[in-house]
Amino acid sequence: MTMAVIILSVSFVGLLLLRFPVAVVLTVSSLLTAIYLGIPLAVIGQQIVQGVNSYGLLAIPFFVLAGQIMSTGGLARRLVNFAQLFVGAIRGGLAMVNCVACMLFGNISGSAAADVASVGSVMIPAMNKKGYDPDFSVAVTSAAAIQGVVMPPSHNMILYAIAAGGVSISSLFLAGIIPCLVMLVGLMFTSWLIARKRGYEKSERVPLRDVPKIIADGFLSLMTGVIILGGIFSGWFTATESGAIACIYAFILTFFVYKDVPFREAKFIFIKTFRTLAMVLFLIASSAAFAWVLTYLKIPHLLAESLMNISDNPIIILLIINVLLLILGAPLDMAPLILIMTPILFPIVTSLGVDPIHFGIILIVNLGIGLITPPVGTVLFVGTAIGKVSIERASIALIPYFIVLVAVLLLLTYVPAISMWLPNLVNG
Image 1 (cartoon, one colour):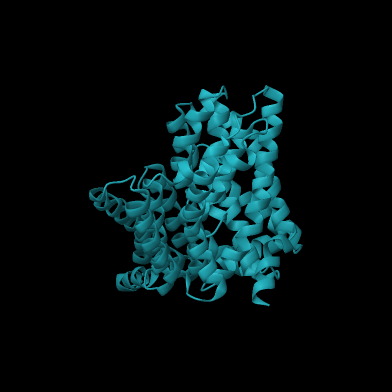
Image 2 (cartoon, rainbow, N blue to C red; image 1 turned 60 degrees about the vertical axis):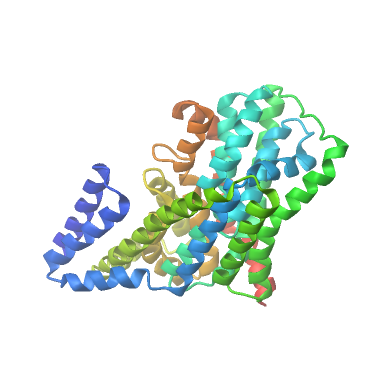
């Protein structure tokens, strides 16, 4: 077994260093280990197929498609205008508008990368034009985009629910709302402090004559999130059904109400959606095989014993897990880490009495921070590309936001009520 663990570890790390796609790395590592152990390759094939044989996965294509339609249709610009009505006139108002807009857009896209790409393309040039430093514009947009992985409907929450063995998706969605609001307050307060220190000017008030149209556009845009969350929480339909209805609403709103995008562009939206889904589903399938091999080698059990030998105090164990995930989140992307680490850590935290829903929020927030952590921060890369700022400058500007996000993570870790109050209230 020791040699099998070495083969699995060395092949995994080696292929990652050679820059192979993560899904390929997981598949090849699993196959090499199975060959050494004499496990029939058909077993690995069965695990790969079983990995995507889940009804819950049907929600992901619908949410991805709805997000693609709305982001292509100029939704980000309308949400920015809507947010500016509330916080635009405060010092550093554009930075706060950025934070609120990212949260609102995350309520529709469920993706941090989509957040920073859509909102950032509107907000970063606008902030630079108003005299904000480019590195600050990129930093606040990248940090605020992390709300997209916590605010429902989050694709990553669905991945966690499946990897954890059927945790309630609707409860996870409920659990993400208050943590996202806590994160928003922290990000806005940090932006205000930095704006005050650097002497950024207040934004101009929105002309009164434009307010009714801005509110109407904002209301129509936000109805996508209302349909998704309202339908799920009321019990009218499941997460999968809400995604399908959201797609229909987004399609009508984009092509027949706003009419910002010609109908012929629809095929390109579907192509982008299919490409995204191909990557996600391949990753899920390969992760299922990799997780099965981990379990066969009893690696989760060995890790649990190692952690318990350090301490049996849940506070210490959760701190160690958070540090481990923050370190892993720097070089690895969020989705594969959810699928790899959940089967390993889930038995450990549940044995300590940590609620699966609570741990899901800890995991999602932690790995979300990894999206803005060099050297492989996907959201950070997208933000710097839009803002034309070097990774080094943006990383330095992100330090205050990184500290705030880690503080929020620790707060969520050790005060479970923040995550669990709303699910417990709704579910009784």
